[in-house]
Figure 1 (tube, rainbow, N blue to C red):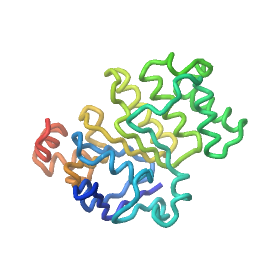
Figure 2: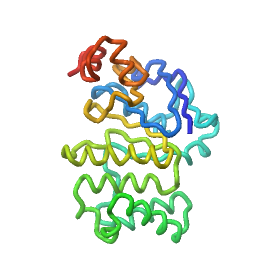
Figure 3: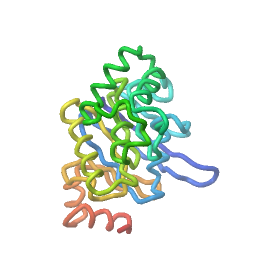
Figure 4: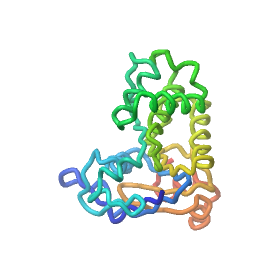
Length: 240
């Protein structure tokens, strides 16, 4: 799936939060949306998921306008938000079945797809446990499994590793990259953590609502004359 955002601007009252942001995400690739807290990442995700109404510009998913054909476009998107959205008192499988029902999947489809995703995440044996019994990293894996139930072409992850330890962050990041490679999934991974981004990733650097860079990480470093992405990020945003 190819996603094209054109001239996105957004205000909260008189305060501009996004300023004419344009970019294209290519099919089957891991894209890192890098920016300090307050850069506008969550607002951009709000527009991509229609939690916020478009004020200016448009978003096209394989040529379908999110403004003009929202229902068709949204069927192609899976989302993992920064805040955990699982019901802690339901089992892992019950959480997946509830979400699948919202997408019109039958109980049989939900069971088959849910078990497939849980197996890929190494969590099938815990399907009948309450979510509150899982650690933070495993809960995040369940959220991603849930987001993939309706077979989306685009997966959006907004600061998905917040609150996780280093090992869990690394494991989650590597698993999502594997989804790009093996399932041709298009991924937009929003983060403020440089260590989650590789120099061969397509990197979008957002700061104070403006897109300051959009290229392979290595190319951005070369353009800025810096040795690594941490130096590039600091050079462009002044953030450490």
